[in-house]
Image (tube, rainbow, N blue to C red):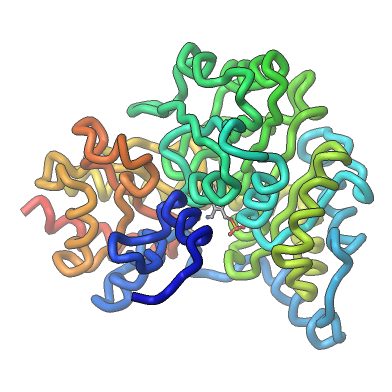
Length: 402
Ligand code: PMP
Ligand code: GLN
């Protein structure tokens, strides 16, 4: 066994990053993508599009590289991208954001989240309330920051939280209420009453709201309301987003956050020692993207909604119980009725059996909740693929019905 420093080992184990033999475990996304690649399966597991985003955006990145925009950008991001983020927040949501003091460009939403948790969490007495299931990096980043995770369940069929359970979870120990809206993996879009309750509780217990809105432009069956637009919210909210989903450029890893200047400064302090900066030629390209006309953004949501319909009806025909999402890349479906009561085993065998990859919901649950009968057969399929690819995937899945 390799020798690894004790402190690192403890932290990694807390974050669920170590397997029983002490080896570093890959993320579920990496594991399932590797399995899909090995078997030649259609990968509806990890959420990434199989087509490029808008040509103007791609062209702007190409031009930036050719023009020599290849050295370190400013620590908080290029002034033009920060201006574009500020304009975008005003244009879509009416939010006033100062591009100089209230915006930070990060290496994807992932870095924005991790840097925020490292900046604001002091130790195990600081609690972070998250909605479960949750995106896998949340629990890992809370563990890396040494904080304590408190979860509020989102249950089928609508995956909206119970407000009493939310109120029970938030206490004076709560440092952060972490919202993800639209939500990965459930596809729920939080209603106004949920968002208002988060704001009320954050005030009452003096907590910071951190909101991950990477699917902000991909809400199709319910309107997306950024929590920072609610009365009394902006003063204690860090809003996080990313170019990855909106511009189909998940590999560029350009993300950002905005919020009150002193909170942003705290995050910059950590971020400068994580990556310092990143993606200089992609920053001007993302600025071009954020300034595209309204039609682009409306079309992105409408196109994705049609893909979900195609995927959902194929899954239903194959015998799954489908939970139609309101937004985001993913459709959840229960495979219990077709022999998939153990979603983890089902996803491990699916590429070999029918040539399709998916992710078990268990990957987004805390260890205590994995295997609960109500959710253990639920698996996640990505709809952000070409129509022809989805058609082929659903025709392969049809064979599950036998
Ligand atoms: N948050 C959520 C909810 C996500 O689904 C993802 C990735 N798909 C991220 C954060 C990470 O975003 P990025 O790739 O910009 O780091
Ligand atoms: N966010 C992507 C998903 O949920 C995966 C990103 C990753 O692999 N870290 O599928």
